[in-house]
Image (cartoon, rainbow, N blue to C red; front, side):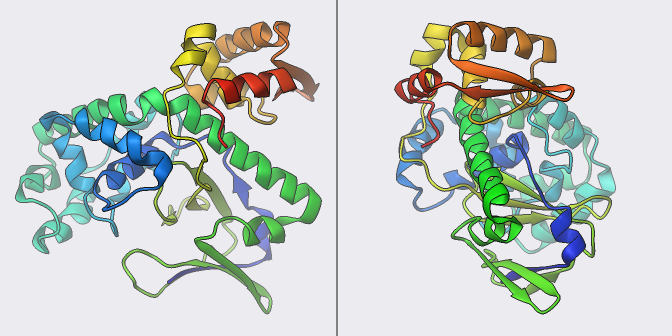
Length: 326
């Protein structure tokens, strides 16, 4: 059991990310490939992804093979949605950190010996890892990114409504069936059964918590960056639809515009849409204007931000195009 011990300051600084973290999704997708079973909506995705695997992806998948462990350096604290920017963070990992995270697992026999050069900071091994991440991302995550983004946006919208209607207590109580929430005097406890079965206590001590909804993640996980808020990534509730690439809608609207429509599940700003899809704010604004003119979204200004939401027609088109998160 891993238990977060939260105080009132932590609760006041608890936020929910508005877009998926591409490297958390990538790592979770890698772990899903090694599971004995996956949820029904991921079964065809896993079959397609396994069929597309190539030897060049092995340096990354070697790091995803353990259900109870993943090196922190492959999910850096930036938690961004843009793959190239996030990959640059991995590329900047210091050699001493590679050794600290990988060498104990190698010595224990948990990782294959071919990971050794990476643990030593070998430049060629680093390049092979980045190439492997790029290749795996292209087949396992990139084709489904608009669906993943729409599902995460929808989950965040549910949390936002719960926060307004019932407060942060309700948000955390109903966050995930994997998580348990209870008060303990002047503090609060958010806990889950960790995959490695060890009793761990984590105290943010006023740093707050960033909640990261994740599509592929099989179980909650904590990423603790001492310089910022503690990060709790949690699996969103399973979709009722099989994960697809949303090709019909992309063929109708164009791939980027279809992705913009998918992200506008409930109330993101133009800049949030841009960050979620890794496009410029100007491009996001242009696509939003076209969707608004077609009657698929509405927009209104809130201070300096322009917020967007689906119209009934836009929501219906998403469902028909197989990018609906539910």
